[in-house]
Length: 141
Image (tube, rainbow, N blue to C red; front, side, top):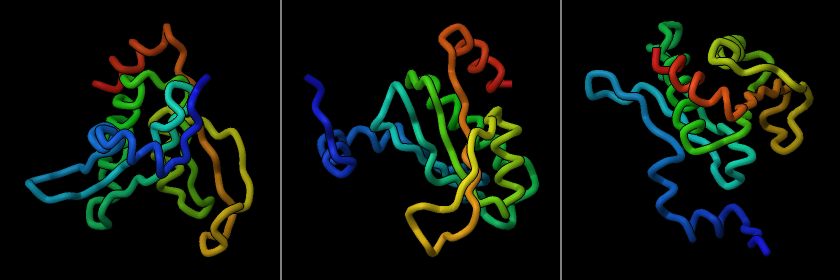
């Protein structure tokens, strides 16, 4: 019988996860971006939670490169599906996710945090076993 963890219990019981559930993007020894994901539902699903690039580095392709590296790492962990969402007014985020290979699968109002009100766009990337090697190779280009 599989043990069902709450998210908090899962991370306390598996501190090693901190080493493979996110990273900072650094340029010239300065942090310019951050991305993290929730691995608690591996291998079925990994949700990318935070993805950001410092304002002065936006629009230069770093967000796409960061997302491609996150996807590469998540695929290497055996994920079958990767999901991410963004606010509908954040056009650069939408372009970043789409250019990294995500496809929109749903839209809707923010269900949990009213302070983040507005329409949300939900994206996913399905990873097929025979596609995994090809995706890793393409993301390295």
